[in-house]
Length: 294
Image 1 (cartoon, rainbow, N blue to C red):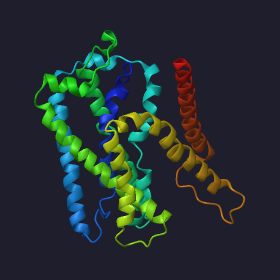
Image 2: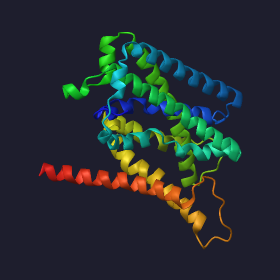
Image 3: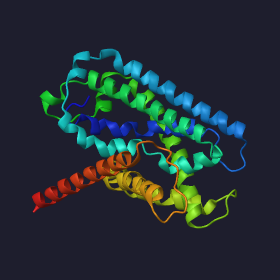
Image 4: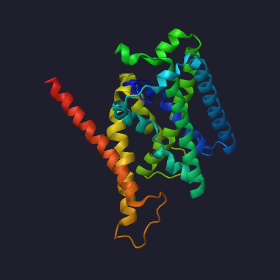
């Protein structure tokens, strides 16, 4: 349920939740070279348990004053504003190659991991949406933009420490997944040997965002819409569908590629068309805003 433009204002806070999927679907991934799989599995299990525990505590504390009638309020005109944030929130395709490697290319296990790894954070998002929309009503009537977490903290002193704990865990697990995926990509790009310590890849992965975050601590929030629209929807919306189309239906291939995802051209067209629609809508909106400044 979407009410006003509220979703974008708190949706980004839960960006780290989807990292739970990365922990569940990559429980055999090496976080540090040389660590045993048993240790890594234990660390992953602890992180997942801690995130779910802190999230559950936050929901229980924050949902004490839910007004169920507020969940019936809708404004679907605000839905398109949330698409870039939603796309950015559920992007984990960059760790799929690492996942496939660690699951030894077992298609059944890969499918199960991706489905479960998507379903769990999706459930957490929906629960959190219900809590926020139900406990902080009146945005439409007041016409003001309010930070839901700040309002919860001011009304309940217990929320603050839980938010800090959950945020720390969410950010930590997000870094694990993204560092693994991006460092693996950089190693391939630089043609570095696999299975070895890669200080250069970790340096290239971590140093640029560290510098940017130190120069402008608010840059992450400023980049959310831009990255979700132009970065994520192009890299993980348009390109994969176009590549799949080329692999499946190109006449240059000696043998056709068996499709893993059903739906054929209809599914691929829907993915590419939906991504392009959002991209061009955002371009049009940005152009209109620029014209309004002159």
